[in-house]
Amino acid sequence: MKNQVAKPDESVLARLSGVTHHYGSILALDELDLEVRQGEVLEVLGPNGAGKTTAINLLLGNLPVQQGSVSVFGQEPGAMQVRERRGAMLQVSGISGNLTVRENIELFSSYYPAPLAVAKLLSTAGLEELSERRFGKLSGGQKQRVMFALALAGDPELLFLDEPTTGLDVDARHRLWDEIRTLEVTVVLSTHNLAEVDALADHVIVIHHGQSIADGTPAEIKLHVAGRLVRCVTSTLPDEITQLPGVIQAKVRGRHLEVQTTLPEDLVRDLLARDEDLVDLTVEAVDLESAFLSLTKESP
Amino acid sequence: MTVDRRIRVYLLEAHYQFIDVLREPLFSIPVLAFPLVFYLFFGVILNFGGTSMPMQTYMLATYGVFGILGPALFNFGAGLATERDTGVLLLKQTTPMPVGAYFSAKITTALIFGATVVSALFLIAAYAADVALFRWQWFALVGVLLAGVVPFCTLGLAIGAWVKGRSAVAIVNLIFLPMSMLSGLWIPIYVFSDFMQNMALVLPAYHHAQLALKVIGMDSGQPILLHVIVLVGQTFIFLIVAALGFRRVGGFSIRKS
Image (cartoon, rainbow over all chains, first blue to last red; front, side, top):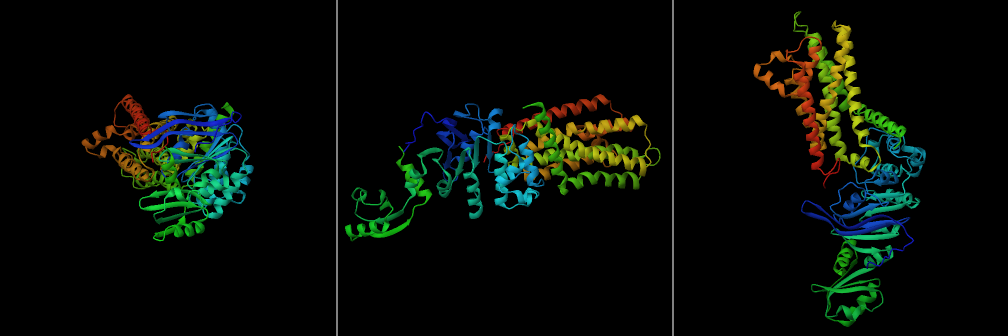
């Protein structure tokens, strides 16, 4: 389903082309292609260990390129001019815990040629009340908001957010989503949370075992995880039911027929009518992991 | 980067790294207090040297070395390892911060702490212990002591480049305390057996202490050039060890995970 065609009028800010990356004998990325277009929120979705953080670290110039090519703003990803125009929020456990929120922000702002005002960063990240608190004394959600403010310090055109809401409670997560939504910059965000795609993305790339297995809009990706998964042992074949209303896909896995549908009740009635000997019936939510598996199976 | 901005980044980075460690009582108290308390106790109160070898003068030089060694080793060794483990170094590396600003801030912080300890030692020496030196000796001693920041910071850098944050403090202590002892910083080196005195020849703190003692005419009598050559050579070795450590982890800060 690589149906996202780059329009010529959209400028590509960052690109991975045919990137393969190993850590010793472990393959982290396998011929990965990725394009970040101006103005979009691109989400890199995948389970833990899929290669999301490796892809982001390559785009940031934090890892040497082993195979393939990486460019950001048409330059090397680690070039000084590139670093001045982008911001990043990484999976780091902390910055100077003995410095206050304001001091940490002031320090990071000093690195950039045209930083946002410290007061503006504090208000954007909702940190006015906490500005004189030491970073080490903050809660997990508050720390993430500081990291977010640091990523914005240089008034970036391109923002990298590596799993920004991992470990946050629901309130803190929604709050950060609201803050990201108000930004008018291009964003690359990695996540394993499908709800985050719903909330923010314009464009989604799904990575599994270091390969891009899907590339499209959130609606296209969500199709794979919509509805319910109905499983049973039956003589009915997938082809007989793929045309039924609500059915997204049907296949045989082992002894079981597996059907993904938005209308599970109708499907179950239909299946029972077709085959009286049907046994071992279960209906469950489609989780991201199984959606990834089905996507993997589809890809050639 | 314009010159103005570069200066501002270097100053702010040094300013905030200094404040950061100053607010860390586990760092600042031992590093500032130990040399002063030890000097007061061993050099001034328990003055076992007699009049021929005034211990308060001898120990002013050796505890000065001790006071320079601590902040340099801990700030570079443990500080760098911790900042690499938490990822703050990686985060800074993604910004336009010049790498030089980070390292010069570490050196500056070690210098300020070292200079503070040396100043306090001098005040104790001059006013509480009646140490009498020529004016040029006071100035020369300050200069020699502060110059020790260079080899000791590179030793810290070599440690910080190789060890993990959690074990860094323990490893720095394992080097810091025995080296101080064996280099004759706590108890005069001539009290030790010949074997131990010969062993001290490999320790940078020994050679630095001998240079400091040379200023007040109390060294073991080896030539200045020997100490300088060893210290310069070891500084280069530490830099190479540090560079190998950074290369091993695939860059100046990133971890394999």
